[in-house]
Amino acid sequence: MNFSSGLITKDVKYNCCVPSVTIRINGNDWNNLVGQGKLDGLRYEKFYVKDSTYTLSLRKVIGTAPQSIAGEDFFK
Image (cartoon, rainbow, N blue to C red; front, side):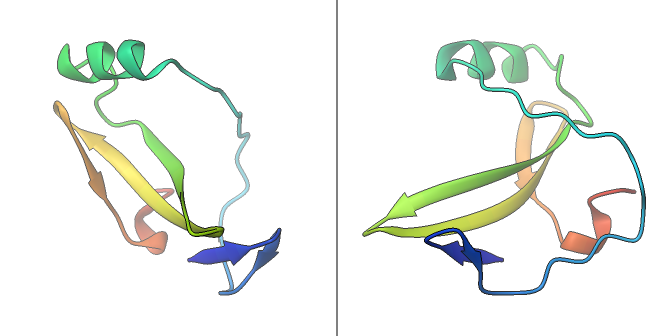
């Protein structure tokens, strides 16, 4: 899934209605919490910026390691 200049370039579909929240966290705090296993099971969206292009990635923390997941697995 990608977006550029605020426009989504691939359809994003969700088949579930759930509350969502947006948080920002310091990188050191994030690494500390993941390393302690306190974020196990957390699903989140992460975006990367490179050459003015944004890439959106769906991720899940499994144990102490974040891993990419497919869009259909985000709400499982």
